[in-house]
Image 1 (cartoon, rainbow, N blue to C red):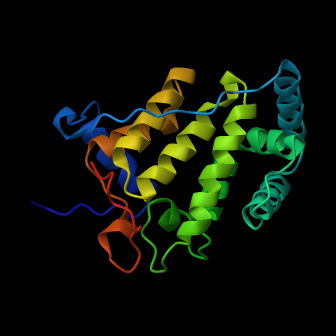
Image 2: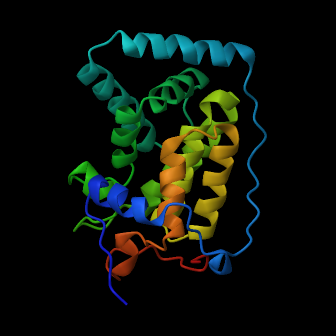
Image 3: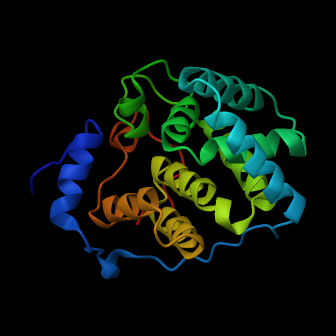
Amino acid sequence: MNTLTIKDPADLLSFIGHTLGFWPQESLVCIQITLPVATHKAEYATAVEHHKEAIVNRPPATAVHDAHELWTGMLATKVYPTDQDVLKLIAYYQFPHIRDRLMADIPGINEPSARILFAQTTQAPNWSRIEWAKQLLTHTYTLAAPEYAAPILTTIGYINWWEGRGSKAHQYLQLALDTDPGYRFARLTDHMLGAGIIAGWNTNKNTAHRNHLDMP
């Protein structure tokens, strides 16, 4: 059996083109995802829309920097952020180039973003930081209106892939696609999982997540 290595987004998209629609049903473990009850209000959705408008009106580099500062500040503390900061985070996650930067911030590794996203780094990730990010994003989901939930759910799913929990990752990606069937990042990530691609960190005992009980 040949070994497939994903080094950057171009490798992934090229491979997905050959595996589109493939998901090995026999490898799935049925896992029920229970999300906290969403508490979003109409005014929250309005606030997110206003934040999105403000982001569009800022220079792109400034928007990315501001998002990075907000998110890394949240990751550095064990205190849940204010609702207003969470709504700003939801707005930032709606922009793919900002979303990718925020996802790359999660493991706490100073390496190229593409290598971080595909778990191909030489450094081991900070797994406790990753777990805290997952808790923060789960909390963030509770304040997200349905039309803004897909990027949050997809990122939670992606974190589960990093951790080697492929079946849970698949469930979160399906939830993301339920909220937005056209959300391309969720669909591409789900095809990656369906092709059996394992996060690089989990192929090395020095970087692997400690808990592999949910490996598909």
